[in-house]
Image 1 (cartoon, rainbow, N blue to C red):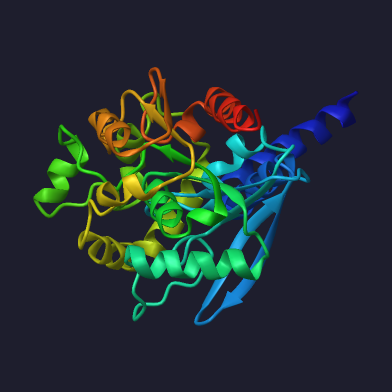
Image 2 (cartoon, rainbow, N blue to C red):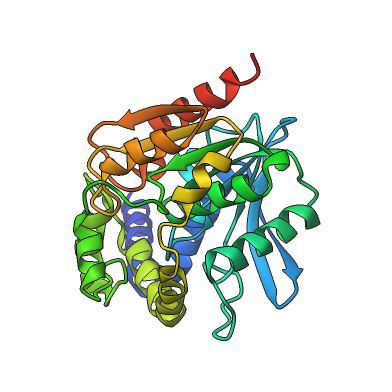
Length: 307
């Protein structure tokens, strides 16, 4: 009995040591486990000067392409994607983000990114699909649908950027003053950023916190460049909305501090065929904060299109 107790104590001590001594490796394990649970496999492809990493999974006849937001990456969709296993799901790290190439000399404006995204879709042989995006990704999803309407079955706007909201959010007020509150200063700054993005910030284990801070530091310079590249035509999607022919879902967290919910009527006015869903007590990333409710609303929308 004494030997068993010693073994248990040693095991717990080793686990605690790993938690704090090897946080990045432990965090990578957590992420890999979440990808596996969602049925997603990481892949990569070279497109011109950029190498794009992406997640792919599911076996359904219809494809769903999911686009993350500014300074985010493909793993923002893991919990949400776990509910979409009956669809073929593709989630790229957009150029300049995540594990994809980050080239200081490249342009990351909307037109350049949509061109790269179209080349990516052509290269992996998807040409008729549902597209949805969060924040900047929603902006890109709309721009893609306006430019390549024949390819799109539906568009999902999840707290999407690209239009001028009727009220300016807290974040946009700071951006107008030249501050970017979406960029992390250091590890201690994580709680502040979490309160901006989430209505009820989730608990973030130390290994994931460490990995998040590490990635943010590595990507800071390119994120600043991307922000500058996107400033030109910051509300360009507004003019493109009437060009979108596919059915659209406008889905919004009602407590968004990044992009005010007053953007919703702007989308509703511009889109010909749309449905609106408001997620209660939810911030800027509904697919992360309330993945089950958000996925249910999205699945209900795209399944309704079959009829």
